[in-house]
Length: 123
Figure 1: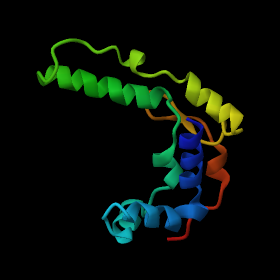
Figure 2: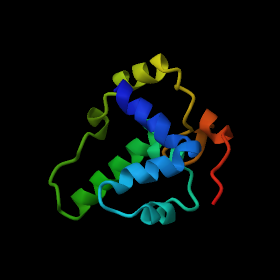
Figure 3: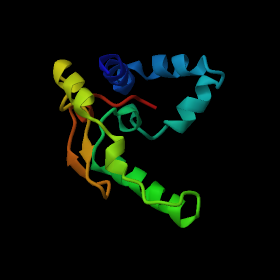
C-alpha cells in the first residue's frame, strides 16, 4: 500500500505532469491524449488514493443502478468492499494524511488537501 500511495503522490504533483503522461504513454496511447484529457484538471483530483464518502457514494450509486437495470439481483453491501486501515496507515507513515482533499457523498469538498496549494501546471 505504501508503494501505491507513493506513486499517487508522485502522480499528483503537477511538477511531474509531463513525466506521468510519458510513463502512461508506454501503454500505447500518445502523450497528447493525456494532455487533452487532463487539460483543465489537476492530476491530484483524479489520482488521489483517498477513499472518502464521495468515492463510496459513487460505488453505491452504481450498484443501485446495476440492480435497477437487472444486471445484479441482490443489494450490495458497498461498505464491506473497502478496508481502509492499510491506506490510512500508509498515509500516516508517509505523512500524507492531509495531502489530498476529501469530499462528502455529494461531492462537496470537506477538507482541502495540501496539494491544492502547489503551483498548477501551466497549460
